[in-house]
Amino acid sequence: MIANLLVGLCGILHVGFMIIEMFLWTTPRGLKIFRQTKEKAELTKVLASNQGLYNGVLAAGLFWSLTVQPIEWGVQVRIFFLISVVVVGVYGALTASRSILWVQAFPASLGLGAVLAGL
Image 1 (cartoon, rainbow, N blue to C red):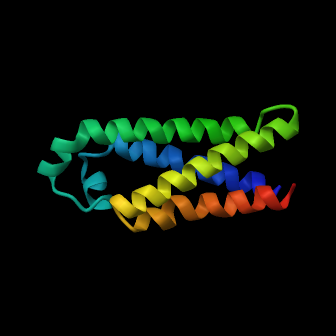
Image 2: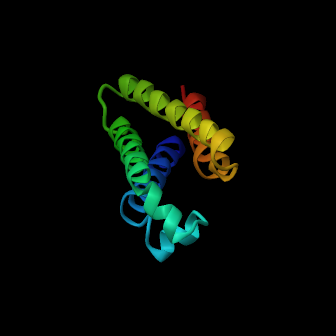
């Protein structure tokens, strides 16, 4: 149950990332979240939108993993998507912003640990 809640939380986080990157990137809220200027946001909005779409795919995979039957297959899908999120988060922390480690990779690591503990 805790593992499923953590997987769902990671999915919700990625829906939020998707919305910010695809739709709010150049708005005052998006500018504040990513600490960037309007000019820089305008130059990078297509890249951010693409990045947002990838976050949406991760969210969809995490939510889907909670419905896959038989349950053994669902667990494997959860593990795959959580590892994917951790890898993406670590890469983002190394190349873009250290905060990505805590906002993206850490929650996924908690979820992965909970899923693995339940095996």
